[in-house]
Length: 88
Image 1 (spheres, rainbow, N blue to C red):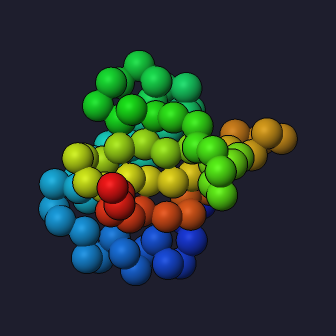
Image 2 (image 1 turned 90 degrees about the vertical axis):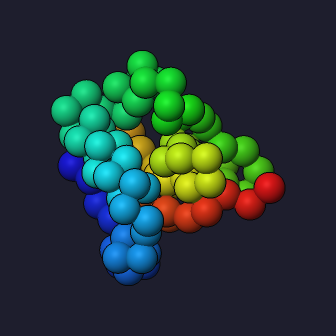
């Protein structure tokens, strides 16, 4: 099950079309395979975050865009907390 914060839903309306398609593909993979399925697709570069984002994971939706999410250990639940451009 994937849960999205209200702020994420607002951002989705303003995403570039190619990023939105990649996000929809990301969600489909997570629904079918779980977050582990993301590790087999190099383009997402799924990784654990550190620092202020400790406990969260990030996947690339393109060169600039990232989806930040957290996995519930009790059940297979994914909480999407942010879809944002990556700052370098």
